[in-house]
Amino acid sequence: MSSLIQRNTRFRRSFGKIDCPVSIPNLIAFQKESYETLLQSNIHPDDRRDVGLQSVFNSIFPITDYQGLYSLEFVKFNIEKPKYDVDECRQRGLTYEAIIRVTIRLIIWDKPQSDDEDVNEEEREIRDFKEEEVFFGTIPLITDQGTFMINGVERVVVSQLHRSPGVFFDHDKGKGHSSKKLLYSARIIP
Image (cartoon, rainbow, N blue to C red; front, top):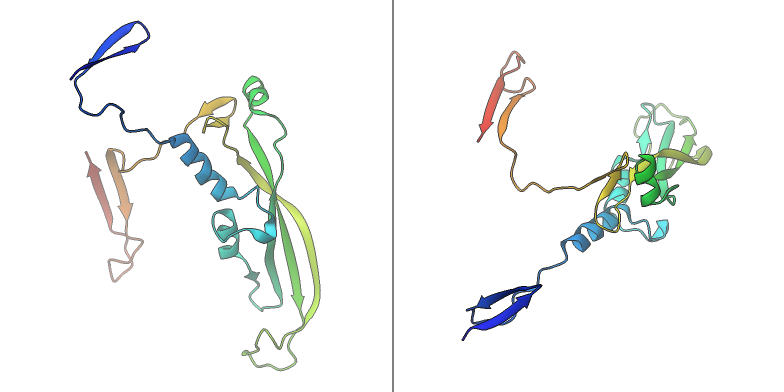
């Protein structure tokens, strides 16, 4: 049978068999949880999982020089509290962001006594090391509404499931031809 549903001042007649519609998931909470997983700012640096920024830093470091005498190692990163809140950033035309500081360790290894190139890391000895927290940059923070405040303007990240229409030009970086000539191609996505 039909039932009357009143919203505001309009009456709507429902002829559906199911009385309660399907609940809509909180999509903003999904965006915020995903961003929090990227940053892991509420987790102690020693307890962070290897995802997000932690994974990026772990994949880049350690960086070793050509001779193997110096190496830079990633220790941890800290995300500071933002300097201004969201409303103040909107009024001043600023970006709602936080500073990222990274703790880096420089290890100076002793030069091997022998000329053998195959010296294991366990056999090498550390001559000196220095550990320092350095300014790495800033990263925009997500607001409670799931948006970003960039230069005082609220921005929203829109996920694209497919590529936008247009013409895309590309080349094969010299891999397709024996003389290493660049082969250009164009794709049209309607």
